[in-house]
Length: 179
Length: 69
Image 1 (cartoon, each protein chain N blue to C red):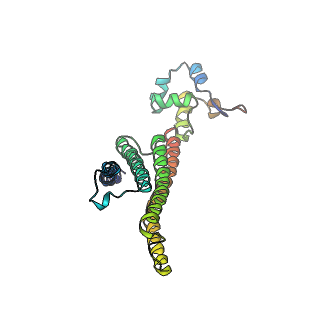
Image 2 (image 1 turned 135 degrees about the vertical axis):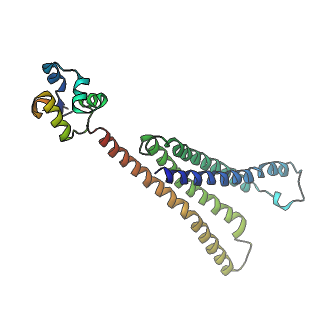
Image 3 (image 1 turned 135 degrees about the horizontal axis):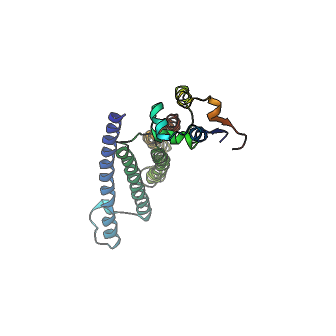
């Protein structure tokens, strides 16, 4: 059990680093938005932000911070269970919160990406060809759904783990209270 | 709880202390306390046998069924 917990610790740390980099890359866009709002930057094409982009970026940023908070919670569980058993009420509630949080996050990030895709890449008026529009829509939407499903599955598995921890806790309690 | 533990009564009748009984039957005083306070979820036959042997009594003297919860 301790060995698998160590591996989980490494995975959570790795995810936290990846998330921190993503938060930094998203966070660095905010100064650009402010500068472009006050017409201080003109030349760089990436600074062309619409109000929708700003709103979507802000929501995305908040969601990333939320995900980071969930991972920190999971990391706390992993570290906290070094000395005592994994089957505890605290671990169960943390796993449940993280599982539900990941499911909500995957749904919210799917909506955000879909809106970003709709406003940026597909663009109904960009291409007159119905075939091209259909192809783009199918391709991007397929990619979008495909990339979000693993996160949803992970969330469901974490919820199953939470239920297993609850069952384990009850069995452990029964065993501990058998004299 | 539907099953009551009358260990205190038997201990008082035998003029025996809890730690003395715990030592005789080979369980910790903490576990004996759990048993006495009715917090235990189950009791092993081996523990019951040891208690009956140490206190010279029957299982029915220690355990009692009550309809009240």
